[in-house]
Length: 532
Ligand SMILES: Nc1ncnc2c1ncn2[C@@H]1O[C@H](COP(=O)(O)OP(=O)(O)OP(=O)(O)O)[C@@H](O)[C@H]1O
Ligand SMILES: [Mg+2]
Image 1 (cartoon, protein in one colour):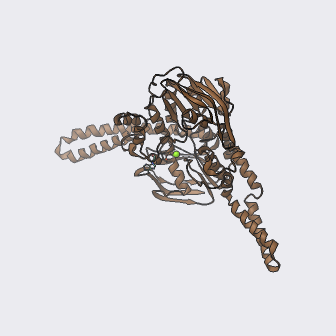
Image 2 (cartoon, rainbow, N blue to C red):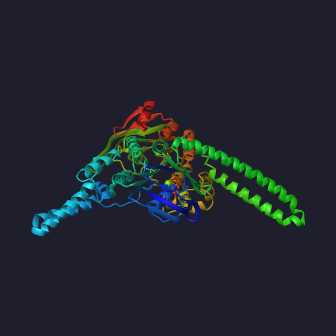
Image 3 (cartoon, rainbow, N blue to C red):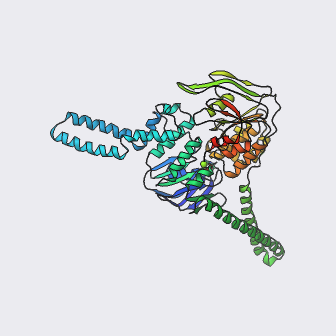
């Protein structure tokens, strides 16, 4: 159970929400929703006890399993499997058991009696923690989340961001926590794993908080919704399933719009009246008060209007290039003894649209990285055609410099970019005013995605390599990005488990990994993206 009293959250000096009194009980499956940057992750972190709130308190009972949105967190020593097992302290209990076994074998009389007693206790503890079945249980969870067995005994610091995150998620599910706080758990998962996770969470008997841009997951799993309203700085609690929540929310929005229209009218009347009365000396003070109130009403309305805006996006016309700007020939990649793919060839023609499909670990991200020159192929070569300008969007945003500011990142994304132009593009991606001086490391997941896309936009690229570009985006921003993508004239090679994103791209061809077979796009391939 987690409960808050008069909780207040801030981002730097900015107020996110205040006066939050909520409870998360067993059986609650709660979806946290709200715009990118509204404070969902901040709230989850505070509930988990990883940071202190700006005000108010949090009470917790029972074990909590928290999966942060950023995969670059957590322990990185030891093997993958040990990391999962450590969630139930199984490694420690096993060590104590060995110790007692040794005592039983070497002592006599009263000492032996004591050792036997102790053994019974440790054995019960071991059984309670899952006992001998635990390892296979841990392995089963990891496998279901798309971690291949070959990875179990690898050191954590050799794993990719995606694998690392799946291990963390497996660890949390294995931990037997009473309350789960999962921040974007489907990032890095393939369709099969998502389906498995969905079933798992639907049947979860403890308390569950889930933050996800995957509407499908939210829709099937949650029975309550907490809406974080960045305009009003409150959390609206809906004790409803997703569909009813949407209806209720629409009604609430409608009502608020009406209230706003009324407020506007009121402001107008106050303003007119105030101006009329100002002329009379005896009523000057009252007039002043009216004008001030009108002003106040207006400015609060203005805030809402500015914040509700969604970036209106267009990727610029791509720079001219030859017929085949990019091609790869006989590419392959091994990590140690693990073969990812061999002999993959592809030809990317000007303006063509290609989707890369394949299960987790089939090497989709790896292939994109090779094409983007971020990684060397073990064999073959990548050829750049005449006039090629590459734009690479990395799943983990590793193209961004986390220590530098938004504006600095933007400025370094193109050689001759001038500050006014950089600010202009940033503005259309909703980074305005002092925002641009925020370092990337404090940005929310969706804000990082927006920034990474903004750096692509200024580059006039004619080939875009996009790795899960819609992860973390709120629905409105996602629509905007997909609209821009649909109209983009250059070539696009995309990896995505978001069916809508693939639909918007209108792909012509598909590359299937790990075999590297190429095919004309057929609608049957949608089944491979997300299986329902
Ligand atoms: N130290 C800081 N200084 C200034 N702003 C900050 C700081 N830390 C976080 N923020 C801002 O706090 C806001 C809330 O971030 P949070 O990660 O909670 O959002 P979110 O709702 O999870 O968004 P998303 O859907 O994009 O993941 C963001 O606008 C972020 O830029
Ligand atoms: Mg977040």
